[in-house]
Image (cartoon, rainbow, N blue to C red):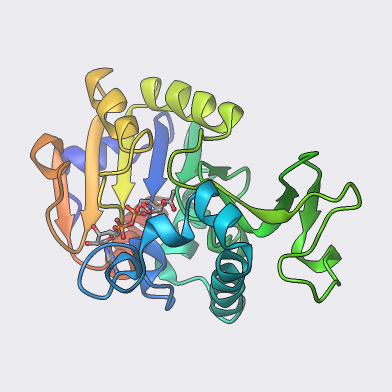
Amino acid sequence: MASEVLKTFLKKDKRVAVLTGAGISAESGVPTFRGEDGLWKKFKPEELATFDAFISNPQLVWEWYEYRRKLISEVKPNPAHYSLAEMQGYFESFHLITQNVDGLHQKAGSKEVIELHGNIKRNKCISCDKRFEEIELTSKEMPPKCRCGGLIRPDVVWFGEMLPAEAINKAHELSSKCDIFFSIGTSAVVYPAASLPLIAKKAGAYLVEVNLERTELSHLADEVFLGKAGEIMPEIAGFIKDKD
Ligand code: OAD
């Protein structure tokens, strides 16, 4: 299944960077954003995923995030998440960068996941920036308020917002220094995350894409696996295991 060239990159002395998107969690039951059943087909991002939307209708935005939190709390990682967790530790370096806010990589055992778009379980005050875990919020107010009086919002990146500087800087650096870069389950259209495979490719990395369908990135990829991440990633991880 893995080509002869790919096999030469699945070796201990290689540096691996991985970017994942909503597609990797689709088989767990988390809806993606684009495509036929995508969230952005049913909901308008400008009404739910911008700071202005939150300020004009905090309750609606908070409720939407509560709905997604509930959904995410009920799902489990799938074989693609577990395969990536298995792959860490095998290579000279292995770094997982995700656009997902669902925490499923960590649940599957991945360590030091770089979360570009935040995490849906965390919250922060819009005034003093204090961080809160979901569990700490006992108030029935929607959204709850911080001690300082500020509204509490989900700690995710909304449209028009900057990505956490540390995360995106680290992701840039890792992408420019890897031997092989996997882009898995992402439509590769949302920047700056979508620039990471381009950076890797430009720096000479072998670019592998795993997706149900071809994307904006496919023409640049050295290898494209069309299919479900939950089926393809176990085969790739299995190849590494079989070698030992
Ligand atoms: P998208 O919804 O844009 O794309 C999901 C991709 O996963 C599509 O290309 C699908 O073909 C693919 N896919 C679906 N199921 C799959 C499966 N089982 N195996 C492999 N691939 C599969 O999601 P993202 O690319 O993650 O940002 O979207 C990027 C950002 O746009 C999100 O982080 C979010 C969104 O608006 C913010 O909220 C800031």
